[in-house]
Figure 1 (spheres, one colour):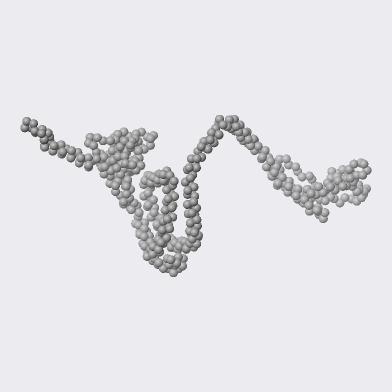
Figure 2: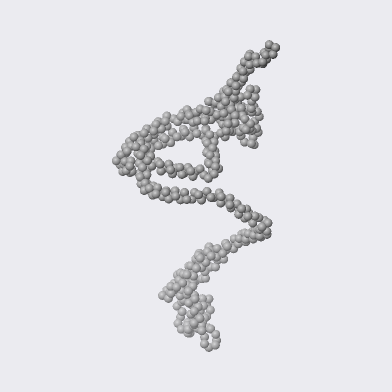
Amino acid sequence: MTLHGGREHGMSRRKAGVIGLIVLTVLVYFAFTKDIPFTRGYEVNAYFTNAANIQPRSPVRIAGVNVGRVAKVERAKDSNLTKLVLDLDDEALPIHANATAKVRFRIFLEGNAFVDLKPGTPGSPAIKDGGSIPVAQTGGPVQLDQLLAAVNSDARKGLSSIFTEIGTAFNTVGTPEENKTQDDDVKKLTGAEALNRAFRYGPDGFRGGAKLFDALIGYSPDANLTILRGFRDFNTAINDREAQLVPLIADFGTTIGAFADDEDALRQSTKQFSRLAYESEPTLRELNQLLPALTKWSDTIAPQLKEIPETAREAGPWINQTQALLSKNELGKTAPLAQRTVENFAKTAGASRGLFTQLNRIAVCWSNNWFPTLNTPLSDGAASSGKENYKEFWYALVGWNSAAQGFNGNGPVLRLGSGSAADVQTPSGALYGKAAQPQIGVNPLLPSKNPTLRNDVPCYKNQRPNLAPSPGSTP
């Protein structure tokens, strides 16, 4: 300090002490409040029926990211609601009129509560600074005592019995009958001892699990991001349905009661399951022997799978060239011509539907009527040939051809032996010739009348004609 003319220049001790006290007060204020006096951000008032464990400075989050804090916790005027004043950062904006807010716990056993804010949909109007989120769009936390209260006494007794039976199973040696279905390594051991011995197979299992988790990592960060987003969406859906969780837990008591009513059947089913596991052991052993080969194959194909993205990138130019080849400039008039061809083919196919229908009816007629009729042998008594009638038709033509051969230059004629003792007449009564003896009839017998020809019944619907001789036929 420099003296000039006997006076002391500079800051006095009193002034320095006052300034230091003010600075210390400001630092202490910042340390405890973490706020700048006389300033505030964007505020929204949210009204809750239950805002337990929420304190001033509790975080406000959107999709797990802190976007503000709770500025005040107070009772709403003239009501039993709790009013939370949310001080939000700029990155939280905008907050829409259909926004929702719920109190959540960061750990399962309650504690470290925060406000989970959903800003609403863009189509809804934005809430102005100082606006409110009504109680219909807020929700309190589901606390552990509420979950326990939803489980009635019978369900709690059932749970207690389950844990008691589990403890008994861990500390009881199997009966001789049960040991028959057990592996030699765990016979005469309690459940806990057998489980403890099973851990010797743990290293191999952990190695396989490590490879499995390594495969789940994927070849790009996007794969894990997709999985995490799926878990996020699942947890969001669970959180949005808190009201449905309580009845679900209450119904758990009904399920336990049903198991308790069928205790004997459940015990038998458990024994059968143990026997099934024992009988499945050979199959599992074979599967275990197959796993090394499968692992080797997986190790072999893994490098090739890593080449797939590079292959896709290399195929990019070829795909671009193919797209250019298929463009309008390259195809020219071929594509429109092909289009018209396909359209005309479609019209032809549509117009041919009736033709194919008729062809199908003709095919059915041939299959169901014509062919079976032509393949039916005719009954001619002792003179029956047993051949299909269409074959007899050709046989008759051959015979007529032989009988009609003439050698006198008059051309082919049908020669019949006849006499004057009897007239040979046609079925219509016309005289055909004279026979040496009276006619006794023809085989097969002619029907008394010609069958009716029906033009109103399609062939494919008509019944097959009966070719058996009629008792009432005229000889």
